[in-house]
Length: 235
Ligand code: SAH
Image (cartoon, rainbow, N blue to C red; front, side):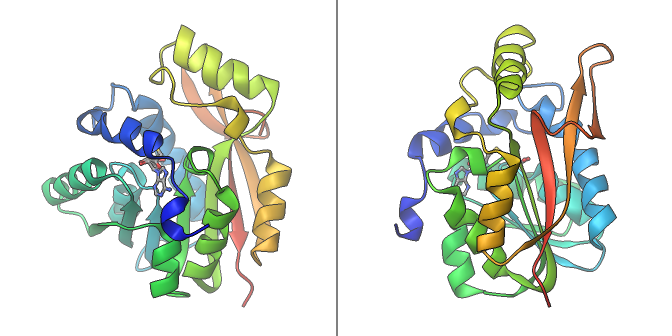
């Protein structure tokens, strides 16, 4: 598979068609806005942000990329959607943060700039590509020895089907219908072994839990639905 093959165009078009809704904190992508402080908190537990060079893979409209930049990172966001790269660019200009965007596949960037980022993030993206292993390997190539790679995704188990698809898309309307396809979800053991095969060591994994009563997300032990993991490329 070549770099340009590892993409579902319907996924890129689906997200791209909603580009102008990306920064509405109460809109279709509210969930990404709500979980963003938790992702930054988890990243900060395992890596320095300020002064470090980050690449955010599958950045969408740049919610995490900008968050990293606000915390002092030199942040590059990459995605394959023209519309999202445009929205991300415009938003960073308005916010005046040190975030930059490029339309390029992670595999191509890894060929061009191996080992040139202090840390790498790839959030809520692996479940939208044909070959997540190729994305994971490219992220491992992009990070400097000693650097961290962060992934978040959805767990392929019935609870995630109920919460992330039935509840979030159909009952609570927290996500647009059709955002997720259960069979593309990734078990923590699969993520870890793919990362291991790419030369990354698992450092920590934590659940991003949703409490329907107070409607808040928090980091916790339950990795049954959405989870985030930190891997290190050995020195
Ligand atoms: N990481 C962002 C957005 C997640 S939505 C966040 O968590 O805030 C998933 C994103 O992955 C979309 O922006 C979509 O365009 C992107 N994407 C899907 N397949 C991709 C691919 N093969 N290469 C790069 N980006 C991709």
